[in-house]
Length: 499
Image (tube, rainbow, N blue to C red; front, side, top):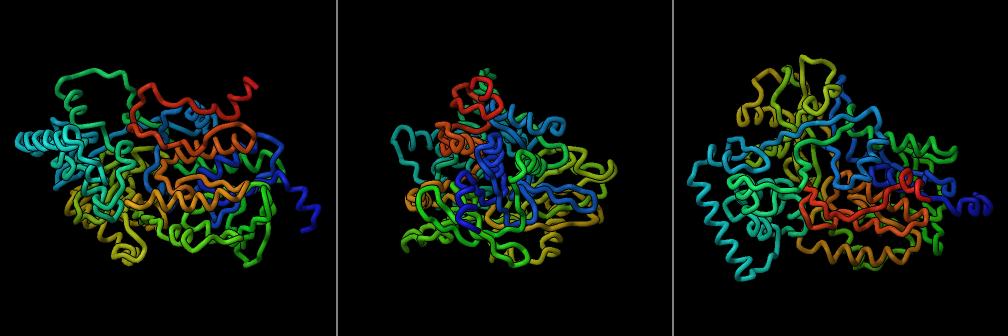
């Protein structure tokens, strides 16, 4: 590439990764002709973890992804993007615990029915003891266990939070940070549940639990639509698949060379003013020249991810259950969560006479589950469905497709925060380099969080003063709208009305 070619690309934004955050950044930047956008993706598909697998006419999301957000500006953006392609879905979820089914969110009446009045009484006593410890005597909350026990007491924690959390993360709750518990637990405390269930108190808070929006033909349609818009905006914009980034050279402020290899082994270089990385935060420092100090590499390398294996089943049955999700607590069941795509959208199956299931097996590369063959994992899942959950009969599962995904869940261990700060301190010296997304920031984002971060970063690159890293930092429960949420930027289409 000549010097003139390099100078022509001073407004070039190169985005590393075609997941929801990277594509959202490119989508927003593409609303102006002042920037050229190039997205580099190592896979042969867009979407990252928001992929939808098609097998024999059945569509399987890589785990269950729903669209919900407290930000109405973001909802309107989604509805514009997916106009004519999204549907509303009623959410019905349950918990499978100790070979019994419980409603989710937790209902006292349901717990009494399944476990008896003694269990409820013991749950109340343990909650009062926890309240004394954490509220009256100010016992510090040191980890995930403490956070859950402070909210619900030891009994309900053990029934509905410990087992599933440890299944997902692969670590004892005592070794996990409490940072995100308030966002992810279904209610602010046991007292909130008692007030609403037993005292019939009213609340002016809007719940996001009961229904959600969903792309009719699978979640991958969201990143596909963003990629289509990026490439259709301007002729020189591109989303390049099977392009694996191997090096990022920093020549000075807003002056980068990004090297990548294509499937044929050829090496290419893109010159950019800005580089937006969704590459896992633990990997990014190892690609940058000049390289970091050893302590930065050590901190980055020790950021932990949890992997996932999705066992996608074709079932010769019209419907397995009415659940949107089923959370499986019991440790002797190999999978931790399942959903039935047909309950989300009838377009996810090729006919009305059959259905399908997605079973999520949480694991870590190299552990016992990961080392099992695809067929062995699938057979064990079917066996558990038949013998432990009783959802299918022998012979009803007629086929399967197993999909593995690395680095699915960033793990919040007790030391993760200072490690991230050390890595970010190193990255902040490179003017024009930005991190975004679940893996890119090592933040447990939902898809809407990653898209919102990307859109706001795009606004920032266009010259607006917005804090894209503030997304998904609020401590309140994510599925309740209280009316006090921060008002974020309205994104390009609505912002133009006042410009």
